[in-house]
Image (cartoon, rainbow, N blue to C red):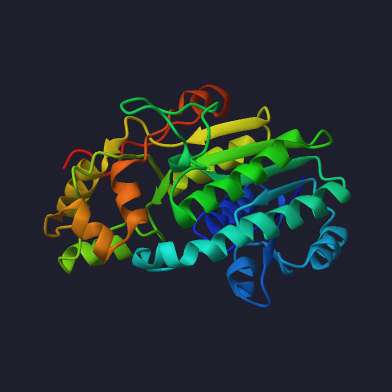
Length: 303
Protein backbone atom coordinates (compact mmCIF):
# COMPACT_ATOMS: atom_id res chain seq x y z
CA UNK A 1 0.00 0.00 0.00
CA UNK A 2 1.21 3.50 -0.87
CA UNK A 3 0.49 6.13 1.78
CA UNK A 4 0.95 9.89 1.57
CA UNK A 5 1.12 11.79 4.87
CA UNK A 6 0.54 15.54 4.79
CA UNK A 7 2.24 17.16 7.77
CA UNK A 8 4.72 14.31 7.93
CA UNK A 9 7.24 16.10 10.16
CA UNK A 10 4.74 17.15 12.83
CA UNK A 11 4.09 15.82 16.32
CA UNK A 12 1.93 12.97 14.99
CA UNK A 13 3.13 12.91 11.40
CA UNK A 14 6.75 11.97 12.05
CA UNK A 15 6.20 9.04 14.46
CA UNK A 16 3.29 7.91 12.26
CA UNK A 17 5.52 7.93 9.18
CA UNK A 18 8.15 5.95 11.08
CA UNK A 19 5.62 3.37 12.26
CA UNK A 20 4.14 2.86 8.79
CA UNK A 21 7.57 2.57 7.18
CA UNK A 22 8.57 0.01 9.81
CA UNK A 23 5.51 -2.04 8.83
CA UNK A 24 6.89 -2.23 5.30
CA UNK A 25 4.44 0.18 3.70
CA UNK A 26 5.53 2.59 0.98
CA UNK A 27 5.31 5.96 2.73
CA UNK A 28 5.74 9.44 1.31
CA UNK A 29 5.71 12.63 3.34
CA UNK A 30 4.37 15.92 2.07
CA UNK A 31 6.55 18.85 3.13
CA UNK A 32 6.84 22.57 2.40
CA UNK A 33 9.93 23.46 0.34
CA UNK A 34 12.84 21.38 1.65
CA UNK A 35 11.91 21.48 5.34
CA UNK A 36 12.34 18.09 7.00
CA UNK A 37 13.83 16.22 4.03
CA UNK A 38 16.54 14.49 6.05
CA UNK A 39 14.18 13.69 8.94
CA UNK A 40 12.04 11.69 6.54
CA UNK A 41 14.81 10.06 4.55
CA UNK A 42 16.52 8.72 7.66
CA UNK A 43 13.36 6.77 8.62
CA UNK A 44 12.78 5.39 5.13
CA UNK A 45 10.10 7.86 4.03
CA UNK A 46 10.14 9.59 0.65
CA UNK A 47 9.82 13.38 0.96
CA UNK A 48 7.79 15.25 -1.64
CA UNK A 49 7.48 19.02 -1.71
CA UNK A 50 4.11 20.69 -2.27
CA UNK A 51 2.18 23.70 -1.03
CA UNK A 52 -1.14 22.92 0.64
CA UNK A 53 -2.45 26.29 -0.52
CA UNK A 54 -1.68 25.43 -4.16
CA UNK A 55 -4.03 22.70 -5.39
CA UNK A 56 -2.04 22.24 -8.61
CA UNK A 57 1.13 21.43 -6.67
CA UNK A 58 -0.88 18.86 -4.71
CA UNK A 59 -2.25 17.38 -7.93
CA UNK A 60 1.31 17.04 -9.18
CA UNK A 61 2.38 15.31 -5.95
CA UNK A 62 -0.53 12.88 -6.25
CA UNK A 63 0.41 12.09 -9.85
CA UNK A 64 3.98 11.30 -8.79
CA UNK A 65 3.17 9.23 -5.69
CA UNK A 66 -0.12 7.64 -6.84
CA UNK A 67 -1.10 6.92 -3.21
CA UNK A 68 -3.75 4.45 -2.14
CA UNK A 69 -4.31 6.38 1.09
CA UNK A 70 -3.84 9.98 2.19
CA UNK A 71 -3.50 10.98 5.85
CA UNK A 72 -3.92 14.66 6.66
CA UNK A 73 -1.93 15.64 9.76
CA UNK A 74 -1.51 19.29 8.77
CA UNK A 75 -1.44 21.87 11.57
CA UNK A 76 -0.08 25.38 11.98
CA UNK A 77 0.43 25.69 15.72
CA UNK A 78 3.21 27.49 17.63
CA UNK A 79 5.97 26.03 19.78
CA UNK A 80 4.76 28.27 22.61
CA UNK A 81 1.18 27.49 23.74
CA UNK A 82 0.83 31.08 24.96
CA UNK A 83 0.71 32.05 21.28
CA UNK A 84 -1.94 29.51 20.24
CA UNK A 85 -4.82 31.98 20.00
CA UNK A 86 -2.86 34.36 17.78
CA UNK A 87 -1.79 31.39 15.63
CA UNK A 88 -5.28 29.94 15.22
CA UNK A 89 -6.25 32.04 12.16
CA UNK A 90 -3.35 30.54 10.19
CA UNK A 91 -4.23 27.05 11.40
CA UNK A 92 -7.87 27.64 10.45
CA UNK A 93 -6.87 28.78 6.97
CA UNK A 94 -4.70 25.68 6.63
CA UNK A 95 -7.71 23.44 7.33
CA UNK A 96 -10.23 25.48 5.38
CA UNK A 97 -8.08 25.98 2.26
CA UNK A 98 -5.19 23.53 2.54
CA UNK A 99 -7.27 20.61 3.77
CA UNK A 100 -9.87 21.10 1.10
CA UNK A 101 -7.17 21.39 -1.57
CA UNK A 102 -5.64 18.14 -0.34
CA UNK A 103 -9.01 16.38 -0.40
CA UNK A 104 -9.77 17.71 -3.89
CA UNK A 105 -6.45 16.47 -5.24
CA UNK A 106 -6.85 13.10 -3.51
CA UNK A 107 -10.35 12.53 -4.88
CA UNK A 108 -9.27 13.49 -8.39
CA UNK A 109 -6.35 11.05 -8.11
CA UNK A 110 -8.66 8.18 -7.17
CA UNK A 111 -7.36 7.71 -3.62
CA UNK A 112 -9.37 4.97 -1.91
CA UNK A 113 -8.76 5.86 1.75
CA UNK A 114 -8.56 9.31 3.34
CA UNK A 115 -7.93 10.05 7.03
CA UNK A 116 -8.00 13.53 8.54
CA UNK A 117 -6.94 14.91 11.91
CA UNK A 118 -9.75 16.58 13.83
CA UNK A 119 -10.16 17.77 17.43
CA UNK A 120 -11.90 15.79 20.14
CA UNK A 121 -11.61 18.70 22.56
CA UNK A 122 -13.89 20.82 20.32
CA UNK A 123 -16.86 18.48 20.77
CA UNK A 124 -19.93 19.66 22.66
CA UNK A 125 -21.45 17.66 25.53
CA UNK A 126 -23.68 18.70 28.43
CA UNK A 127 -21.76 19.50 31.62
CA UNK A 128 -20.71 16.28 33.32
CA UNK A 129 -21.17 14.18 30.16
CA UNK A 130 -18.73 12.92 27.53
CA UNK A 131 -19.24 13.62 23.84
CA UNK A 132 -19.67 10.69 21.48
CA UNK A 133 -19.11 10.69 17.72
CA UNK A 134 -22.55 12.18 17.07
CA UNK A 135 -21.71 15.31 19.07
CA UNK A 136 -21.44 18.62 17.28
CA UNK A 137 -18.29 20.70 17.18
CA UNK A 138 -18.36 23.99 19.07
CA UNK A 139 -19.33 26.26 16.19
CA UNK A 140 -20.58 28.89 18.66
CA UNK A 141 -17.27 29.19 20.54
CA UNK A 142 -15.94 32.76 20.73
CA UNK A 143 -13.90 34.49 18.03
CA UNK A 144 -11.06 32.48 16.47
CA UNK A 145 -11.92 29.31 18.43
CA UNK A 146 -15.37 29.16 16.87
CA UNK A 147 -13.96 29.87 13.43
CA UNK A 148 -11.46 27.04 13.90
CA UNK A 149 -14.24 24.65 14.91
CA UNK A 150 -16.37 25.70 11.94
CA UNK A 151 -13.51 25.20 9.48
CA UNK A 152 -12.77 21.73 10.81
CA UNK A 153 -16.48 20.89 10.84
CA UNK A 154 -16.86 21.94 7.20
CA UNK A 155 -13.84 19.82 6.26
CA UNK A 156 -15.20 16.83 8.19
CA UNK A 157 -18.60 17.15 6.53
CA UNK A 158 -17.17 17.32 3.02
CA UNK A 159 -14.95 14.29 3.63
CA UNK A 160 -17.64 12.15 5.24
CA UNK A 161 -20.04 12.97 2.40
CA UNK A 162 -17.57 11.79 -0.26
CA UNK A 163 -18.85 8.62 -1.91
CA UNK A 164 -15.77 7.38 -3.76
CA UNK A 165 -13.38 7.14 -0.82
CA UNK A 166 -13.31 5.40 2.56
CA UNK A 167 -13.36 8.45 4.81
CA UNK A 168 -12.13 8.51 8.40
CA UNK A 169 -12.10 11.42 10.84
CA UNK A 170 -9.88 11.01 13.91
CA UNK A 171 -10.82 13.44 16.65
CA UNK A 172 -7.73 13.52 18.83
CA UNK A 173 -7.54 14.91 22.35
CA UNK A 174 -4.84 17.37 23.39
CA UNK A 175 -1.54 15.68 22.60
CA UNK A 176 0.95 14.86 25.34
CA UNK A 177 4.25 13.00 25.34
CA UNK A 178 7.51 13.44 23.39
CA UNK A 179 7.61 16.46 21.12
CA UNK A 180 4.46 18.05 22.56
CA UNK A 181 3.72 20.95 24.92
CA UNK A 182 2.75 18.48 27.65
CA UNK A 183 5.91 16.57 28.50
CA UNK A 184 8.55 17.01 31.23
CA UNK A 185 10.65 19.01 28.76
CA UNK A 186 7.74 20.67 26.97
CA UNK A 187 6.62 24.28 26.86
CA UNK A 188 3.84 23.92 29.44
CA UNK A 189 6.23 22.30 31.93
CA UNK A 190 8.68 25.17 31.42
CA UNK A 191 5.93 27.71 32.01
CA UNK A 192 4.83 25.89 35.16
CA UNK A 193 8.39 25.81 36.53
CA UNK A 194 8.65 29.54 35.84
CA UNK A 195 5.55 30.12 37.95
CA UNK A 196 3.44 31.14 34.95
CA UNK A 197 0.75 28.47 35.27
CA UNK A 198 -2.78 29.69 36.06
CA UNK A 199 -6.26 28.25 36.61
CA UNK A 200 -9.07 30.54 35.54
CA UNK A 201 -12.11 30.67 37.81
CA UNK A 202 -13.25 27.21 38.88
CA UNK A 203 -11.23 25.56 36.10
CA UNK A 204 -14.08 23.10 35.70
CA UNK A 205 -13.90 22.54 31.95
CA UNK A 206 -12.88 18.98 31.06
CA UNK A 207 -9.88 18.36 28.80
CA UNK A 208 -9.45 15.07 26.95
CA UNK A 209 -5.81 14.19 26.23
CA UNK A 210 -4.13 11.44 24.21
CA UNK A 211 -0.52 10.26 24.33
CA UNK A 212 1.21 10.84 21.00
CA UNK A 213 2.10 7.14 20.66
CA UNK A 214 -1.51 6.11 21.31
CA UNK A 215 -2.65 8.59 18.65
CA UNK A 216 -0.20 7.02 16.21
CA UNK A 217 -1.42 3.50 17.03
CA UNK A 218 -5.04 4.52 16.45
CA UNK A 219 -4.14 6.13 13.13
CA UNK A 220 -2.32 3.01 11.95
CA UNK A 221 -5.36 0.92 12.91
CA UNK A 222 -7.69 3.32 11.08
CA UNK A 223 -6.02 2.55 7.74
CA UNK A 224 -7.72 -0.85 7.62
CA UNK A 225 -10.69 -0.28 9.96
CA UNK A 226 -14.26 0.67 9.10
CA UNK A 227 -14.49 4.29 7.94
CA UNK A 228 -16.26 6.94 9.99
CA UNK A 229 -15.53 9.32 12.86
CA UNK A 230 -13.66 8.23 15.99
CA UNK A 231 -12.79 10.04 19.22
CA UNK A 232 -9.14 9.23 19.95
CA UNK A 233 -8.88 10.35 23.57
CA UNK A 234 -7.86 9.05 26.99
CA UNK A 235 -10.07 7.32 29.55
CA UNK A 236 -11.82 9.30 32.31
CA UNK A 237 -10.69 12.84 31.44
CA UNK A 238 -10.01 15.32 34.23
CA UNK A 239 -11.04 18.93 34.78
CA UNK A 240 -8.66 21.73 33.92
CA UNK A 241 -7.94 22.27 37.61
CA UNK A 242 -7.15 18.60 38.20
CA UNK A 243 -5.06 18.36 35.04
CA UNK A 244 -2.92 21.43 35.66
CA UNK A 245 -2.39 20.83 39.38
CA UNK A 246 -1.39 17.20 38.84
CA UNK A 247 0.71 18.02 35.78
CA UNK A 248 2.61 20.63 37.80
CA UNK A 249 3.39 18.08 40.52
CA UNK A 250 4.41 15.52 37.88
CA UNK A 251 7.02 17.85 36.36
CA UNK A 252 8.21 19.21 39.71
CA UNK A 253 6.74 22.67 39.19
CA UNK A 254 4.89 25.17 41.32
CA UNK A 255 1.12 24.83 41.65
CA UNK A 256 -0.70 27.01 39.11
CA UNK A 257 -2.08 30.25 40.49
CA UNK A 258 -5.81 30.94 40.70
CA UNK A 259 -6.99 33.87 38.62
CA UNK A 260 -10.44 35.41 38.46
CA UNK A 261 -12.49 35.33 35.28
CA UNK A 262 -12.46 39.14 35.21
CA UNK A 263 -8.67 39.31 35.39
CA UNK A 264 -8.30 36.52 32.84
CA UNK A 265 -10.56 38.33 30.37
CA UNK A 266 -8.34 41.39 30.66
CA UNK A 267 -5.01 39.55 30.57
CA UNK A 268 -5.58 36.45 28.43
CA UNK A 269 -8.86 37.08 26.60
CA UNK A 270 -12.19 35.33 26.29
CA UNK A 271 -10.69 32.39 24.40
CA UNK A 272 -8.55 31.34 27.39
CA UNK A 273 -11.57 31.69 29.68
CA UNK A 274 -13.59 29.51 27.31
CA UNK A 275 -10.91 26.79 27.37
CA UNK A 276 -10.84 26.77 31.18
CA UNK A 277 -14.59 26.92 31.79
CA UNK A 278 -16.47 25.52 28.80
CA UNK A 279 -14.72 22.61 27.08
CA UNK A 280 -16.08 19.12 27.73
CA UNK A 281 -14.46 15.71 27.44
CA UNK A 282 -15.08 13.00 24.86
CA UNK A 283 -15.80 9.27 24.99
CA UNK A 284 -13.44 6.78 23.34
CA UNK A 285 -15.83 3.79 23.40
CA UNK A 286 -16.19 3.54 19.63
CA UNK A 287 -12.44 3.78 19.01
CA UNK A 288 -11.90 1.01 21.53
CA UNK A 289 -14.47 -1.21 19.83
CA UNK A 290 -13.51 -0.57 16.19
CA UNK A 291 -9.82 0.39 16.29
CA UNK A 292 -8.69 -1.75 19.21
CA UNK A 293 -7.69 1.52 20.87
CA UNK A 294 -6.16 1.09 24.31
CA UNK A 295 -4.89 4.42 25.66
CA UNK A 296 -2.42 4.38 28.50
CA UNK A 297 -3.50 6.03 31.77
CA UNK A 298 -2.77 9.75 31.77
CA UNK A 299 0.80 9.92 33.03
CA UNK A 300 0.16 12.60 35.67
CA UNK A 301 -3.23 11.28 36.76
CA UNK A 302 -1.95 9.69 39.96
CA UNK A 303 -0.02 12.74 41.14
